[in-house]
Length: 362
Image 1 (cartoon, helix red, strand yellow):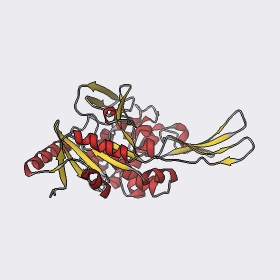
Image 2 (cartoon, one colour):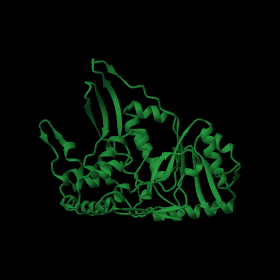
Image 3 (cartoon, one colour):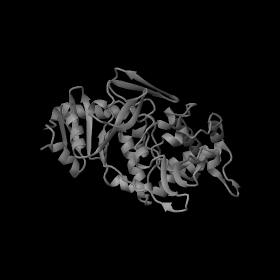
Image 4 (cartoon, helix red, strand yellow):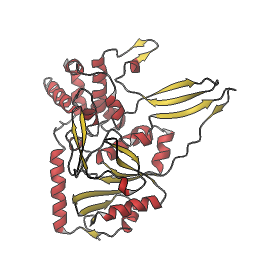
């Protein structure tokens, strides 16, 4: 028995864990290299898991590098499976019958998910889950989460600032950490996780290996904390409502909504009706983004026509309004909005500027 709750084994135990999930009937989703990008895809075997690659992530830039040891995430997040970008709500036949599609959701296991994406699922639990999204709750009910802790945070990561990583603390079934090429540390986070680890050949972490593990964790935290957030940040940010900084930042913004689409917690959607030539139609739910011009266009006019106002709304929603609505930040520090912004707008810089602006008000 491990006094720390941590165990270690060889990397081959990860293969066993993967195969155990497959044998239990789970559809395993994990990071896979697809056309030069890390994507979250179904994995037929452990060998399909991304390996021997690293990534370069900077504001507005993403590249994979062959031969690396560690990679972060790509544009995909668990939202793609839990809250799909296109979901048919019902169909109307040409003779005006309404057909609600039967949804068959397989048992899904996320494998090697990053801690920030685990945190995003926990945020989604408070939004889609608590608000009763039927599809989300159906998938979530049978979800298994195997997290890979980050030991080398990327260039746009700030998960430690947001308290979501780089080491997962709760909400997972199994977490693992590669502290050496030949050694992996495992931790169970649920009763199912205990069952899964019981099928592996593991040993309790001794004092020497525990110190090594802690050193790895400390280095990772130091790299993933580029900003220190002040107390009462949501209230402070509301003091910046009239600041010209949002207009200055939005001068670069294209209003493309890339940040909305790659964000693992953005939940806005639109409902559209699609008619077909045979007289039938379907009603579909699709992702929407608050940066898009049409998002704020309503029958009575447009309540947020200026791009800078849409940027301000998005920023304050993530770091202020969301806390009042759901009791947590809407940002998990994954850095996707920085990496995948075509013009490289960095939300970390916006945070720094906004905090300075708020301090002017005393």
